[in-house]
Length: 112
Length: 114
Image (cartoon, rainbow over all chains, first blue to last red; front, side, top):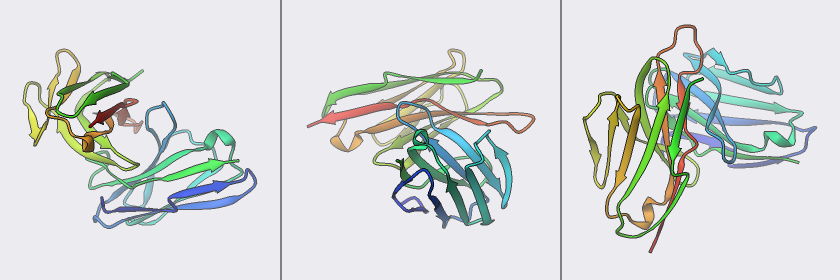
C-alpha cells in the first residue's frame, strides 16, 4: 500500500460513455499527477497539479478532463473516448513537484 | 529530444542469479535519476541518484550513476521470484518554462524462475 488509492481498478466503457477515475492520497503531499501507461511505451505524463492548481497539461486531448478539488483528491473525467485511449491510468503524488513520486495501483481502462 | 533508454527490454533468469539492468539517458539539465519497481500495477520507488560514483544499496539491490557515460545500472544479487517485475528508470531534469520534467524509459521486464 503506497498511500495513493485509485478507483475503479478496472473500467470498460463504450465510446459514447462518460466516466470518472478517482485518486486519493493519504500522504499529505502537495502535488498530484495523472500518467498514462500504454503497452510497450514509456509512462506519459498527462496532468500535474500543485497545491490544487494545474501546472501542466501535456497536450492531452479535451476528452480527458482533470479536476483537483483539494490537495488530497484528483479526478479524471472521461467522455467520448477512442479505442486507442485504452491503457493503464496511474495517479501519483509527491511532496514537491516531480520529487520522489508515489504511485497508485492504476485503473486499467478498456474502450470498446 | 530528451530520452531514456533501458536495456534489455526483457530478461529471464533463474533464482539465485545476479542481474544487471541498464539505463542510459540524453537529457538537458540533468538533475537526478530514479529507479522504480512495477509489480502488478503500482510503481514503487527504489533509488534516487544524483552524484556519480556513489552506490546506493537496499538489501540485494544496488544502483550507481555514471554521469560521464550518461548511464546508470541496477544490480540485483541472488534473485528471488519476488523480484519479478518491470523496472523503470526515470530522469528528472531542470526546466525553465514548465515543460515535462520527469522522463521515463520503457522499462525492463525481469522474470525470475524458480
